[in-house]
Amino acid sequence: MRQGPLAGRYPAVAAMVLLALLPYLALSGALEAVTPIITEQLHTSAQTMALGSGLANAAYAVGTVLAVQFAQHYPQRRMLLIYAVILVIGSVLAAAATSVEVYIAGRILQGLCTSLLLIAAVPPLALGYPTSKLKTTATIMNMVIFGAVAAGPAIGGLQAQADAWRPLFWIVAAVALVALVLAVLTFEDAPPADPDSPRDPLALILAGVGCVAAFFGSAQLTSHAFLDPIVIFPLFGGLAVIVVLIVYQARAKNPLLTIRSMLTSTIPVAGIVLALLAAAASVSATALTAGALAERYDPLHLGLLYLPELGGAVLTAFALGYVLTRRSIHYLPLVGMAFLAAGILVFRIEVPSSEGLTLLGSFLTGIGLGATVAPALFVAGFALRATNLQRVFAIVELLRAVAAFMIAPIFAHFALNVSGGFDRGVGIVLWVGFALAVLGGIIPVVLYLLGGARTEAPDLDSFLAGEGSAYYSPPLLARLRNLPGRRRPATQGVD
Image (cartoon, rainbow, N blue to C red; front, side, top):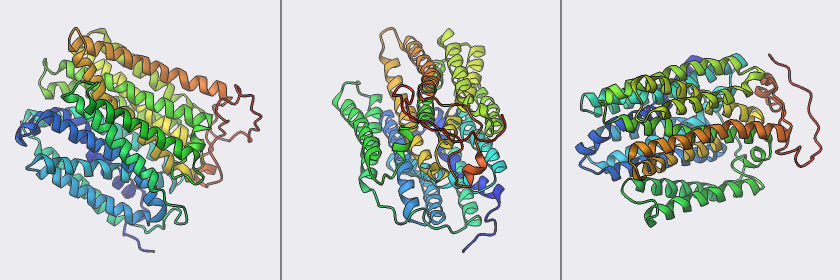
C-alpha cells in the first residue's frame, strides 16, 4: 500500500483536514465586508456578486451528495488529492481574477471542493483513530470550523479597512496549497467504500438541479421582488426537487444516502431538526443585525463587535469534547438553543444594537451556534452505525446548507422591503429567528418523549469497532403508534 511519510500521524492528518476546510469557511464570514470592493474592481453589479455567492453555496450543497457517490466507487484518498488540487485551482482563480466570470468560477470550485473534502476526510478522521482522538477531533473541528466563520467579519473588516481584497484571497490560496501538501504527505491509499454498490445518477441529478435552482432563485432577490417569476419559480421548484430527492432516497432499495434509517429513528430526526432550526435562526442574529449597524461603523469596527462569537465557539468546542463520551451530550444542543434564543433577544432589545448589546449578543449566539449544529450532528450520527457516518454527514450538511445559505437572502429581502424601514424589518426577522430557536429546543424534546428515547452515554468503543450504534434509538413516534420495541442493553460509559 502506498503511503506518504506522515501517513497515520494524527496531528498531520487533522491539520490537513482543517486547513482544507478553512478557505471557503473563512471567506464565507469575511466576504460581506469586501464584496463592495470586489464589485467595484471587477466592474460588476451587486446582483451578479449575489448570484456568484448563491452558485458557490449551491456547489457546496451538491458536493455533499457527490462525495458519497465517489467514495463508494473510487479510492478515497486518491479522490481527496484530486479535491485538494481543484481547491487550490479555485482559490488561485478567485484571487487572481480580473473578470467577474473567473472570480465566480473560482468561488464555485471552492464551494464544491470544500464539501467534497468535508465528506471525504472528516468521517475517516473521526473513525480511524481511538476514542480519545475522537474527542480531540470533535473539539478541534468545532473550534476551527465555527471559529473560522465567527472570525470572518473581523478578518474581512481588516482587509476592507485597507481598501483591498486580493491579499486575503491569496492567503486563502496559500492555506489551500498547504492543505494539498499535507494531503500528499499523509497519503495512505484506501480502497473504495463499496465498489459493488449501484451507482445513482438520478440522486446526483436531483441534488444538482434542486440546489442550483433554489439558490439561483434566492440570489435573484438582490434586485427582484419575491413574487417575480425569476425568483419564485426556481426557488420553490428547486425546493420541490430537493423534497423529491429525499422521498426517492427514502423509498429506494439501495439508496445512496441513508435517509430511511435516519427519518424512521427518533434520535437522528431530533438531531437533524435541531441543527436545521439552529442554522436558520442564526441568520437573523448575525448578518441582518450587522447590516443594521453598517452605517454606524466602519467594516473593521463592525467586525470587532462580532468577534466575541469566536470566544463562544472556542468555549463550546471544549464543551463538546468534554461531553462527547457522556450522557450529557444529548443536552448540549438544547443548552445551545437556549443561548441562541437569548442572543437573539439581546439583539432585539434595540435595533440597531448598541456596542455593549452587540458584544453580548454576538457572544451568546456564538455559544449557541457552537453548541447546536456540530453536537446535534454527533448525537444523530451516534444513533446509527459507524459505517453510515459519511452519509449522515452528507445529508445533514445538504439540508443545513439549504437552511442557512438560502434563507439568508430571503430574510434580508424581507427586512429591506417591509413597511417602516430596514430597522423595523430586522426587528421582525429577529422575532422569527427567536421563534425558530424556541422550536428548535421544544421539538427535539417532544420527539424524544413520543419515541421513548433515553439519554444514554454513548458506547464509542463499540461504535468505532463497527459493532453497532453508540446507543439505542427507538422508532420515530414509537409511543404514539404503540409500537412494540425491544431495547438493547444499556451502554456503558461515563455518566
